[in-house]
Each structure stands twice: as C-alpha cells, then as structure tokens.
Length: 357
Image (cartoon, rainbow, N blue to C red):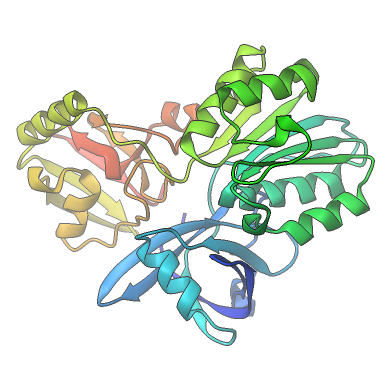
C-alpha cells in the first residue's frame, strides 16, 4: 500500500451547514485508478499549517465511479478542520493518500438484504456513500437510517438524503433525532443514547430482521448502538463500526504503557518502507514505534496517532510488540500479523516491520 501523498485538484467547495463544508476533488488522470475506492472508505489529507505537518482522515461521502467528495465539519480546537473550512477554494489543491479503510461492504446485485444505519453528526459521511451504493447495486435491499444531530440546521447532506428518499421511497427510511429541537413525536426528541436506541428497536425497527448494521458518530452513540445490535443476536462481523476518535486510556493503563516503553529503550528495530530497509532504535520518550521511526528520518505514514485510522499499519514479520489499543484493524488483519505502529512498542530484540506489505 502506497504511503505517498498526491495533489488532488479541488473542483468545488460547498457550504453544507454553518460549520461544515463538502469538498469535491479529482486526481490527475494518470492516478485515477489509484484513487478508486470502496463505499465507506476515507482519505488521509496533509497540510502545512503554520509550519506544522498536520494530517487528518475524512470519509468519502459519494458512491464509487465519480469525483471524490468528502465532508469536513469544523470542530472546536480542530486545527485541520478550522483551516480547511476557511481556506479551501475551487482551483486549489489538497494533498491526499490513496483511499483506505475497512468500514465498507460488498454489495451484490440480486441480494435482498435489510440494512440499519446509525449516524451522528459528521458520521453521516461514510454511511451516505454506503447507502447510495447499496441502493443502486441491490435493487431488492432496504435501508433504514437513524441520524442524530443537535438541530435541523446542523444536519449535513440534508438535501442529498431527501433526494435519495424521493428516488428510493419504498426502500429507504430516514429518521432524524434532534436533541435541541422538539418534534411532535417524542421518540425523535433527544440524542441516540442507550434508552432511545432501545425504544427505537422495540417500536420502530425490529433488530432481528436486520442483516447488516453500519454505525458511525460520537463514541457513546456507537458503543450503545453496537451493544444493542450484538445483544439482539447479530454476528459481530455484520456490525460495522467506524471510529473517528479514541477515548483516553485509564491512568493505570497509561502507567503500564510508560513502563513497557522504558524497558524497550534502545532496542533495535528493522523497518522496511518504500522498498528500503533500515535499522532504527526505539526511543522511550517517543512512546511508539511510529514516532521512533519518524525520529530516525523515515517517512512512516500516519494520521490520527490514536489507533483509529490504521494509516500507520505495518506487518510484523519478526519479533513481538505490545499494541496498546486497536480500533482500526480487523481481527483478520491482526491474525495476519498487522499492527498499528502508532500504538506499538517492541517487547525485545529482533522486531522487524514492513510498511510495504
């Protein structure tokens, strides 16, 4: 998998809400196949902001086959989102890695499935891509979207959702939940917390009739929705969750991580990236293999550095490491030997990692 960044031309910037934009992008013609994507995948962007290399992931919100499009919502204190919503203009460029991510599904013509989607705020972006792709590919499948926001004016892609609803009236149901506005129906007044999700699954949607669930949004909502679907008997592999951020680890776990890193000080690691192999030392103060590699001058890929996006994924080909958290790798990838280098610390000599695998 390539770790290089490529300039994408900005075709359009649209104001979606007061604090969110959508950006339509296009790669150079010779890179069009490299930027093909599966529904639900994301792009890792890079920008120089006040002299600092800042990277963030944003999900693609359109179905495959056309220009790339992402939604960017400005968050308080968010350096990249604040810069992007103020600075990006049509005709400019934005550096991006090729699409990646595992929050995706293979839709198959002829299938007749029932999908349930939980979205909160900007979590609608990958789910919109999945819904539109699924409706177009599986003519007999049905989707239900439960979408939480604060107010009606903060709903991203409201027009696109309404248009989809009109086109697929008999196969798409959209329910909006607002926690700062009142609706005539009490069920829709408030956030998608544990109690409200339980009410929805007992009155609006039968979880036992759902084949696949897609979940993306605030952490608490995702945890509640995932637990509700698993408790209803849905297999884990059919409950797909996309996390943008990770919760801070407990103090006790942080202390263990510091101790493990201290014991690893100076251990040599063999790292392969872009076809070159280097021996680099682990430095405890960096806290991870990724940052030790970067300190040694290697162009190791990264974005969130929180164990979520999997941009820093590498294959462990020798030795042992401790991976502090993992929100970005599937069980299959872990079984194949992949680790998140932003969360990994060597547990002895002989560690070898391959970013190119």
